[in-house]
Image (cartoon, rainbow, N blue to C red; front, side):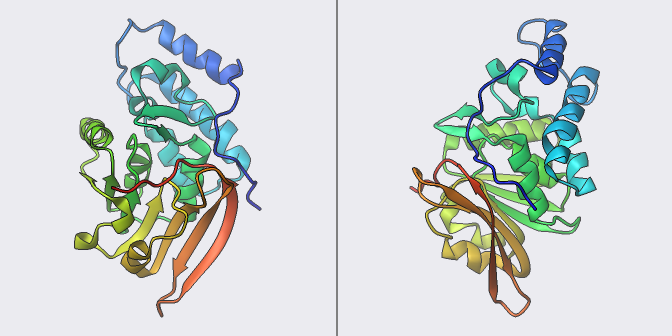
Length: 249
């Protein structure tokens, strides 16, 4: 059974993960960005993140775990927060938005049951981290972000990291991306107060949507919505969560 989890900032505590991160940062010159694929320190911290925060909470999909080990989360957070990039908490990224806690990213990805040939829509690009994790597992990710500053920055980071199977655009994610629909997977990384009908319409029969639903100041429910081959909608409530609200133009 999946544990219940509030997606809210946790009190920072010193420990092995933070100590390892600080050790890595201490050998870098100020402002220097380490190459994710060559820095053994960051790889070790990612491994600790996966084993302590993700596997220990029940995430079992081996492909998802491997994607969480590979994608350099520190590249998707503001420079001043890189020492906290692998902590067990969400982090602010500007414009009133956050990068989700690593466990929540892994949970949403596992719930979507990604397959190599899948095409996905992400609503709420934010930092671009969730898109990168998903893009490591499927054919293509189309991701929509309301805030132009965030969408441009995420697109640049994804390009710098050679995620050429992610397409980013600025727009109202409530409306989805009808020009390239339907999608095998839809992930919504901000909470609407109801499931947007355009997203249901753009989900392919046999597809899966993962979405937090609820008001901004109330407990939200992470839902897995599945569309059967006959077009019927089946909804499973997974866990109590706390996400920023889904905003519209």
